[in-house]
Image (cartoon, rainbow, N blue to C red):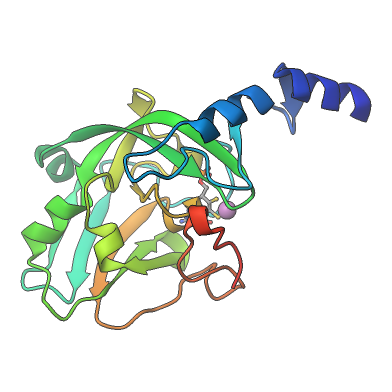
Length: 225
Ligand SMILES: Nc1nc2c(c(=O)[nH]1)N[C@H]1C(S)=C(S)[C@@H](COP(=O)(O)O)O[C@H]1N2
Ligand SMILES: [Mo]
């Protein structure tokens, strides 16, 4: 397909073939609709500089162990009762199914996908987070980390997710378990999650030490430092 045809199809919202996978560039209509919708906090559903696509793009990274059987999640740091959960124990905690939008710093957004998992607030409560904790460090396979303020992580709508769109999470998207912090750019949502560490001091993570913004609010376009 030539560039012109590609652009015409993209503008018409037709499915296009990109890098071997089919993505629907949902088109300007969908962008305008999502921008006109308001969130409960009054912000537009689609943050500035973003456009809507219909499904997650696999954005890479080095996958962790795929098996649910050997999976362990460590909840530790500035807490009274650190603990480790296997996958079965994670499923034994109260499960939440939510609809959440995600916003990737590369300018795509997915609006209204479903996610299932355990609320990070549930894990924080179980661990007994100390008053001195101010930050959360997500720890993933192969040393990937992402940091975020405690009060923006321990709140409703943030999950340790193991299902997406009614199916187990795909390996490319972090199976068996990833973080989901939808109100910050998606790089904060660590895939192949192995630890949640509560910390007194901030600790900029993988992308935050490579030029990305430490906070990553999509409505403020906190893309780069
Ligand atoms: N462990 C790990 N998690 C990660 C990454 C990574 O490289 N390793 N990349 C991040 C980035 S930059 C993005 S945009 C999202 C992409 O998630 P997706 O591939 O499911 O779309 O995952 C984030 N989580
Ligand atoms: Mo990214």
